[in-house]
Image (cartoon, rainbow, N blue to C red; front, top):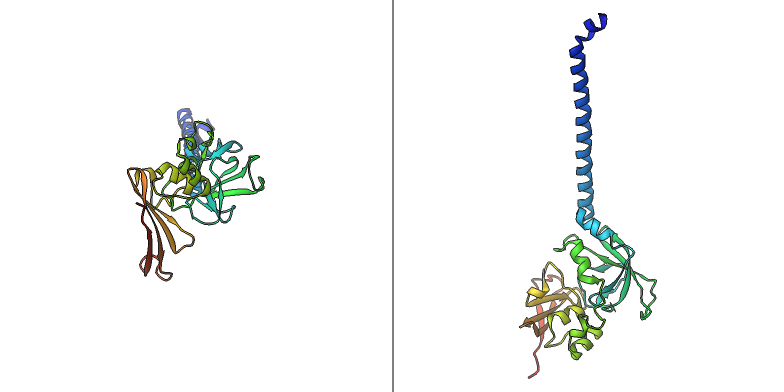
Length: 247
């Protein structure tokens, strides 16, 4: 009787227990929600969505082929857009993916045809200001299929285009597909989708030089080098050197 008097009726005691049970469930729900929010913040901070992270994780340790020439001056810090200077990692090079994440794709060459040390690591960097996501970046530069194999994309190019791609050159009359293989992708902020644009612009031999390529009917119609003033890169004096197509 004393217990009932102190805590109330048996019914009140049961109701109190139900309240405690509900409170525990609410805590578990709240904890789960906080975990999801925290995971989302971590993913956002790393620059990867959950679907992208799952996609990239499945690529680690696998072998791929480069889809374009990859230009670089520092193999451990290759921009996700082409800067037309330095050395070239050839299109069709067999590579092994070492790591993906934190806005980086690390890989090594895995080919007997490589002229350089195959153990030298390369790192393709995905900048935050890029207008493409991590998955799109990976698919731009790597493929399970060898583009240089018989029946691949390279074999569909003309002989002249193939020679230009191998030498890292772009000339008049080349298709957009061939130009992409030779030069790689221009900055996505300037040219979000090269295959749908008739004007491409790349960083040239230095930060004050730009390489501009114009297309007509899917063929290179004009190539232009532009030097901007050093003090005001985009508004200063500039000198244009235009090479007109041969008659």
